[in-house]
Length: 153
Image (cartoon, rainbow, N blue to C red; front, side, top):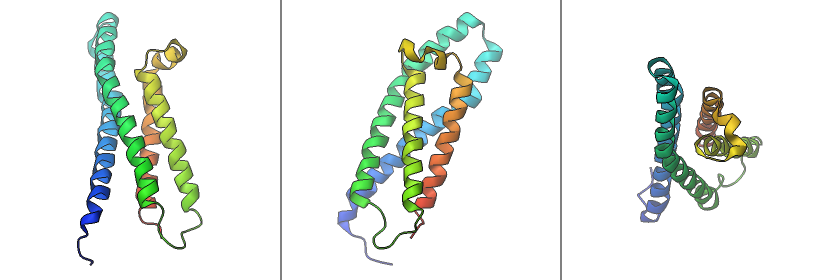
């Protein structure tokens, strides 16, 4: 085991921010899809659900936008500063990274469309269960690929 290097502190802090932002984003996404939506559907009238949905989205919008910004910025930092493992890497490393990046862009797009107000994506907001499920699947794929990439040499 090597000695602690003070120069590693910024990398560690950025990694923590990245991981915490991912936890908050994915946790909130799973809560909305599997707890909030079904409970509101069962317990509230259509008018009450619409009012609650607007209030939840108003608050969630801020966190989604902050989460996307943090994940994107820290992800770019991690890629540029930490980068890929030094030396020869497994032939599928870049393929997995590409899939991870595309999945992340999909997650960001769907999340933005669901919390946004653009009429262009109103049809998506009318089917929140479907799109939250798609986003949850993409988020799980991201997590699995990320953990795999950390162990590829």
